[in-house]
Image 1 (cartoon, protein in one colour):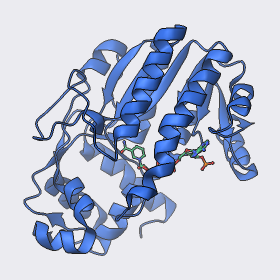
Image 2 (image 1 turned 180 degrees about the vertical axis):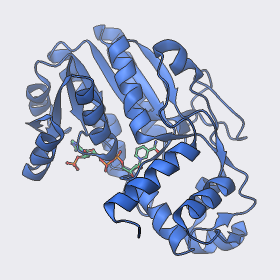
Image 3 (image 1 turned 60 degrees about the horizontal axis):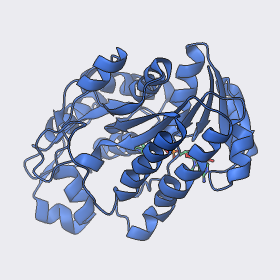
Length: 313
Ligand SMILES: NC(=O)c1ccc[n+]([C@@H]2O[C@H](COP(=O)([O-])OP(=O)(O)OC[C@H]3O[C@@H](n4cnc5c(N)ncnc54)[C@H](OP(=O)(O)O)[C@@H]3O)[C@@H](O)[C@H]2O)c1
């Protein structure tokens, strides 16, 4: 397959390039700078210049490709964010998505894959949910809901197969959020908030990339939740991560105190469950995660950090 990836230089994008290349496919990546062109060449992809907000350049960049993947985001990495910090991400999810699927249509692509997030269907009560659950409209996730609608309606009009892959909570040695957790656990500055009993469905970024490969290979139209096999409680996750890092166990702080220090949004994130399953994805594509639970995944993260020198040996 000839595969075009917007966001190829990001955390997920780099994993996608590696995974599609390893499976023998030709990969073309959108690059916005010379530095990123070089990075893509090193990963074995051919850089194509352009920007998601430049529709003409996008169609040139995607020409000749039968698979088009949207893996671009601009998610703020700060702990405390204001609504304005999310504006660029919202624009990428709405305007960028419209431009990219239009480009996919122009170049005659067979399948378009859209990276979404499981948060778009999280029920308020924190109970387990699946792909049939109704979408919820929250300020930080509604542009992802719009992105899903944009690609699904364009697919229905043009006949391009559209795969929406809603990913769980990403982690990997390279992800900014995982590195932040690791650093803060080592300094004993990332506490368990409240009872620590909220549960999260996580996904190692390499396994998320494997799910995109599985759906592209199967050429399927549909919507899937991309998560590992076992949701984990936040208390258990942080305690086990700290132990693997050789850090002291995380402190426990009440919600009211955490709110004062980190703000309401961060506390809500750390104390809300997001529990779903990969059953439908496995059945449709035969995909299986290399890191079925956080145990294997964190083992890989910590080993990679030791090799890199991010952690003392
Ligand atoms: N499900 C989840 O938990 C989830 C989902 C997404 C992200 N995250 C977290 O958020 C952080 C970001 O990860 P990520 O890989 O998604 O993002 P990232 O590493 O920041 O990469 C974003 C990608 O989007 C590209 N991009 C941004 N604006 C663009 C535009 N206007 N036109 C074309 N390309 C554009 C970037 O290109 P440039 O290199 O040119 O900037 C880059 O390739 C990570 O730490 C990750 O853990 C989590």
